[in-house]
Image (tube, rainbow, N blue to C red; front, side, top):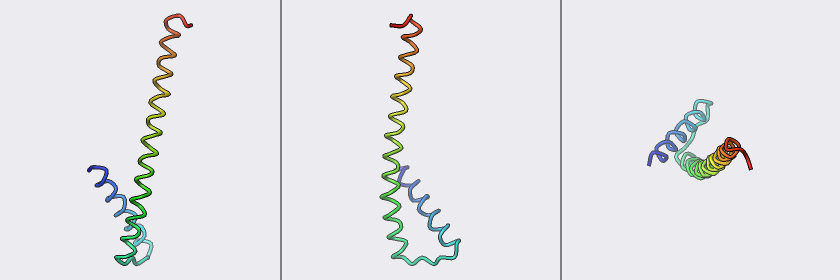
Length: 74
C-alpha cells in the first residue's frame, strides 16, 4: 500500500516535469504514461529487492568467513 502511494507520487512528479517543460498532456497520454511507469517501476522494485538479497547474502558469507578466521581458520 505504501509502495502504491510512492509510485503515484513518482508518476505525479514525472507528469509535472513533462508539463513544466512545456508539453501539454491529455488524459489519454497521462493514462498511457501512468501504465508504462507503473510497469517499469514495479520491475525496478523487483530488481532492487533481488540486489538487496544478493548484498545481504554476500555480507552474511563475509561475516561467516571472518568468524572462521577468528576461530583459527580452516
